Image (cartoon, rainbow, N blue to C red; front, side, top):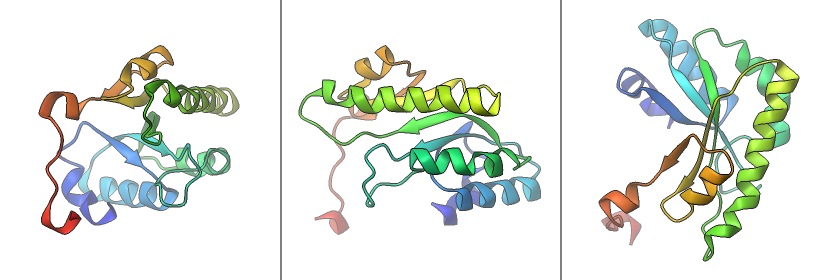
Length: 152
C-alpha cells in the first residue's frame, strides 16, 4: 500500500510485497529521504488474474533493469501467493514457475536473488520442497482471521 510506505520503512526488516515499478520507485524515493536501505521482495502474479497484485513474469524481465537502477533498494528475491486450492499439491506448479523465474533473472542479470517467499499455512511444505526460504504461516499460529464489519 503506497500510502503506508513512509510509516512502514523504518519498522520492517524486509518488505515482501513490492508489486510494481511505481511502488518500488516510491519506496526508493522515501528511503533516500529517510536515509534507509530497505530489503525487498518482488511480488509475482503467478495466476495472471487482473484481480491479483504483482509483476507478471514477462513484465518483471522487462522492468528488472529499472528496478536494479534504484540505488536504495536491496532486491533480495521473489514472493508469490498462488490461488487458494483444495489440494495443497495444486500450488506446486506456481512455486516451480517462480523458482524458474528467479533462476532466469539471476542468469540474465548476473545477480543473486537468495530469497523465495512461497507457501502459506495450507501449502508451505510444497513451497519448501520447491525452494522456499520464507513461508507465511500466520493462520497456523494465530488461527483464522475474524471477518471485519466491512468484509461482511
